[in-house]
Amino acid sequence: MTAPRTPAAAPPPPVPRARRHLHPAAWWLWALGLGAAATRTGNPLLLALLAAVAGYVVAARRSQAPWARSYGAFLRLALVVLAIRLLFAVLLGSPIGGSTVLFTLPRVPLPEWAQGVRLGGRVTAEALLFALYDGLRLAVLLVCVGAANALASPYRLLRALPGALYEAGVAVVVAMTFAPNLLADVRRVRAARRLRGRPDRGVRGLAQVALPVLEGALERSVATAAAMDTRGFGRARPVRPAVRRATAACTLVGLLGVAAGSYGLLATTSGPLGLPLLLAGLGCALVGLRLGGRRSARTRYRPDRWLLPEWLVAGSGLAAAALMTAASLLPGAETALHPTVAPPTAPVLPLLPAAGVLLGLLPAVAAPPPPTWRGAPAAARPLPGERGGRGERAVPGARRGRPERNSPGDPATKETETR
Image (cartoon, rainbow, N blue to C red; front, side, top):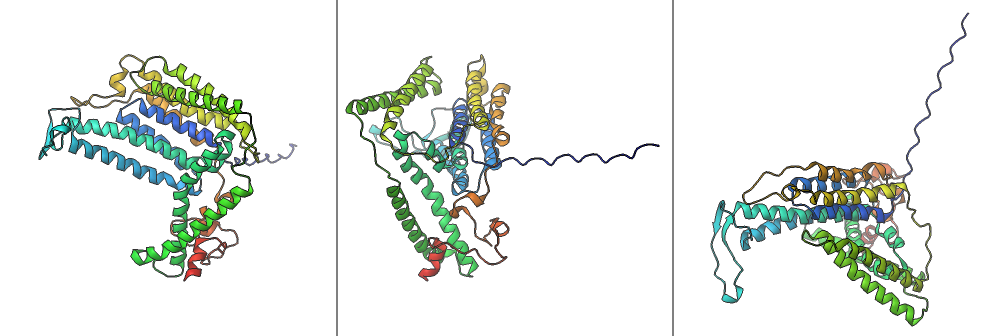
């Protein structure tokens, strides 16, 4: 007689990955690494691959905060820059001559003091191709900066800044978040008007939206100033004059060293002094920031930790820049990284730089997923019933077709009161 079989134990359910914000410095290091890689090449295939990598990571790890919606604006700005570069090449000519004439514009005669400047004339395919590659490199740089701006929280980046840069960081953060917050206010007011059956387009609709948005921006400015005064913004500890002079000298020398070293590393015709200058400048700047931090009397509440995902994200961007730099030093790399345009040649995809760029995809897997909008500021939450928003099903306790009650400082509420 055989014993009855016992049912196999069910495998334990997978543990969901904890959601948290990645350290903003890790996102900026990753984006700056991709941008540095873009400056080392004019190959359109590599530049397109860099833009695709940045876009994929943004789509995979973008939160629902207001600053995360700025990536589309950076993409449009990159296209505008590319179009302006091509337009200048058509109107003002290019140092690349070429023999393949596409069309000829009427030549505008210029005075003698404008010798060397051409307005109109022949437009060649080689000149347009050179302008396209040059403008594409600048566009990819903007895409990388936009990716960092969409992924890194400016408020958390402000908390991570050294004490010596805190006041300057506040100004930068306020400037960076002004446009996203203004767009969020416009979106909420227009959604409130649509829910009430009122027009939100046209000149009349925009004029009626502008007043509550302006009032909300002014109230937010007053609230921000009151919060900064309550938290003691601008107050500093007394330090000795010798410390102040040493701080200023170290900071100035450090910034000059960082600027000279960065130029030496990014320029293709520089000597081997770029890296030593950069390291010396970073050392002086760190000493200056350390001394300047003695004037700051502030504490940090729950500072962001630097864990393994932060190392992986920052390392992937820096590895992409390092591999691109190493590939540019190999024999024959000049043709692969900078395809000739006169005569035009078909660009090829070099394997080593492409592998380095693909390392930039690591944050899409290694970075933890961001928290949902429930932990985001109120301005980031979409209204129920808003077009394209997901807040209608995600609002806890909200009924279908009934908007969430607005806060007293909400521009949508102000729009109702002003009518």
